[in-house]
Length: 366
Image 1 (spheres, rainbow, N blue to C red):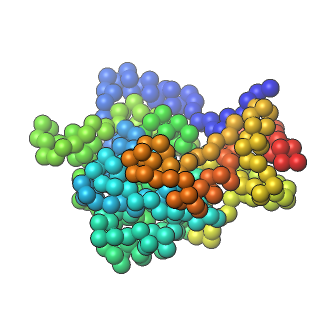
Image 2: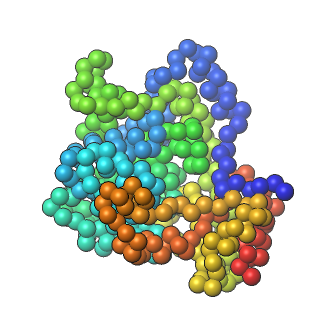
Image 3: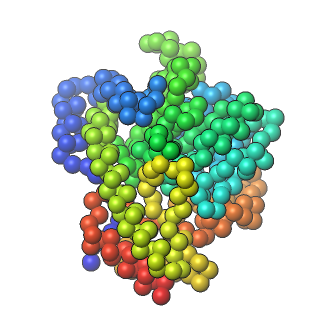
C-alpha cells in the first residue's frame, strides 16, 4: 500500500532546469538570482525590503540582531513553535520569555503577551503556527503603546492573508522559511521582509559577515548568504505558489466538511481576521473519548504519515536543564500539544488519497 506522506514538495523540471542553468553559468554563490528572488518576493508580498538568507533560523537571528536584541534583553516568544524561535533569541545573548497560546487558534494573543512584558523586554516575537496568521492588529496596538518592536516568525505562513493583505508587511519585520515542507522550497532558505531601511541594511550586513562594503567589516556578522542556485529554484517556486495554495485550500475544505460532521473530531478554527490560511499543516483535535496517540499509531499502520508539530519549546530537554522548566508550567500549551494531530495536506494529493485519510481517521476513532 502506498504511503501518504505528511507533506510533499511541488518540484519538477522547471526547478531542475533553473538550477542547471545557474550552475552552467559559472556563478553559483549569492548574486543576480538572489537579488531577483528578493525583488519578486518583495513585489508579491507588498514589502519595501526583502532580504534572503540561507535558512529560516538565520533570518530570525539576523532580524533579532537588526532590532537591537542583545545580552541581558528579554524577547517574548510563543511556547508552541519550532525550536528555532527560542534558539534565535539565545544566539543573541538574550532570554526568551515564553507566552502561552489561545486554545482555539494555537497562536499567542495580545492579552498573554501583555502579562509577560517587563522592563527588560526588547522585542515581541509572534508565530503563525500551522500557517495561520496571528491577530496582528491587537498585538501591534499593544506593542506600539509600549514602544516594543514586533518580529513575526512567519516561517509557516508564506502566502497566507491577514484580512485582505498577504502576511509580510504587518510587523516591524517578518521572517519566512523555505524548508522542504513549506509551500515554496529550495531545500533550505529564509527571508526577512521589512518597511524599515535601517532594519534591512542591518540584516544585509549581518548576512554578509558584517560587511558594509567588500572587506570592510563593521560588526560581528555571519555567513548567512543564500546561493544563486537555491534562488533560481525559488524563483520557479514562486510561480507555482498560488496553484499550491489553491490546491491545499481545496483539500482543507474537503477535510473540514467531513470532520465537522464526523463527531469527536474538531477541524481547525479560523478567526474572522484570517483572509487565507497557508495550510502549512492541517491539524485536527479530538474530544476526550479519543486517544490521540492510539489514533496516530492506527494511521501509521494504514500508511498515513502524521506529525505532532510542535512540542512546547520550554519543555524540550535543553530548556528544562538550562532554565528549570517543568511540566505544568505551561498548561494551555501542554493541553494543545496533547490534543492535536497534523495530517497530510499537500498540493498533488489526489481524491483517493484524501478519502483514504478521512476514512482512516473515521475508523480510528470508532
